[in-house]
Length: 143
Image 1: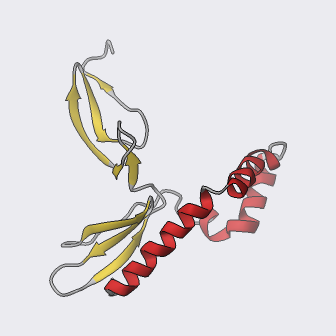
Image 2: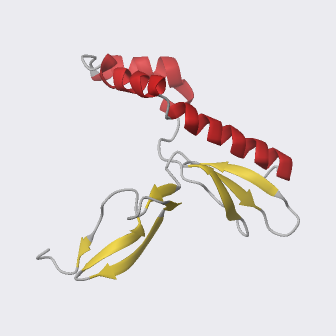
């Protein structure tokens, strides 16, 4: 994993914060609303061709690529929902890890927290501690 200096990490945090601010702008929100329906009448094949034209590397790669940490690596910080600062073991330094699956989710109070799929008992159900979406597993087949 490449080394990441403190100044580089700070620059990346500032860049991520600026991106988040741009995404919250009224113009960005209008553009997203427009894009949701722009190709709604396209066939599956047409939609795939359009997506490949704009995002070939993403469309032709593994869609769900989580962050893969090597032995001794740990997440030190988050730069966005899909980007983490990773500390290596010993003196190996820091690097950036990217995931196509979100690494952060919102908890019950709306705060961003790391996704945590470890199950915990809640009444007669099991639920992940911090899932990406509402999820639960019944104790028995009766639900």
